Image 1 (cartoon, rainbow, N blue to C red):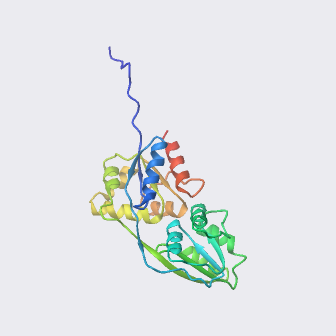
Image 2: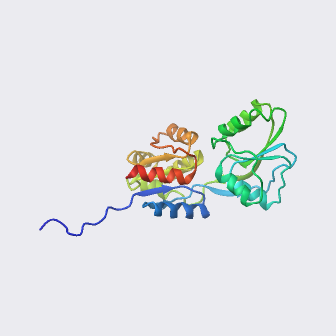
Image 3: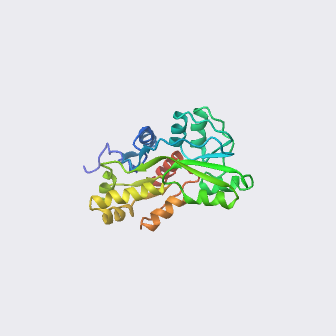
Length: 250
């Protein structure tokens, strides 16, 4: 008899995730498991606080990440004007820290925030508090709208020691999907692959995987490096990215 009366269930797809090396990696892995995937956590970002604090005399202050909000709150920052969040996750972090969110763009991106503020910031002082890898388009767009822009770097984003297991697994054809959440995760993935001597093989290995990028800038960075992007989610948040990617694997 050749038929197995108790056939084994297909194995869960392996999904590489590159969230920062903190509770976000744990939450991402837990979400992927609930969605029926086998998470491959490989943090490509590590937060290095600078100790700087956002200015308090601005007419508008822009926060672009949960990490930035937490660092500002820990420093006792008290905004003097309107508080702007680049997306829902940042807005949730602001509210959790006790700040009111005055501006939240319809499109969660630097361009979306510029479009939202364009008619309000002519002649205004705008403080942008973020990481050292923030998109230049935000500063340029606000300045073009007539704002006096000041940037405060709250933290630097570095690549953790030991990152790169996902690159080796991709090179071996063992990754079914990869979730890139910023241009920097793409760059750090490739740098880790280069260090391990598998860059070309890792990029080739991703050709057979579902490669997802959280937004167009991330997708453009990947494409410029020779990585074909299969999916950009309808909303630029991690849960939507994960859900749409796992659905694409079915």
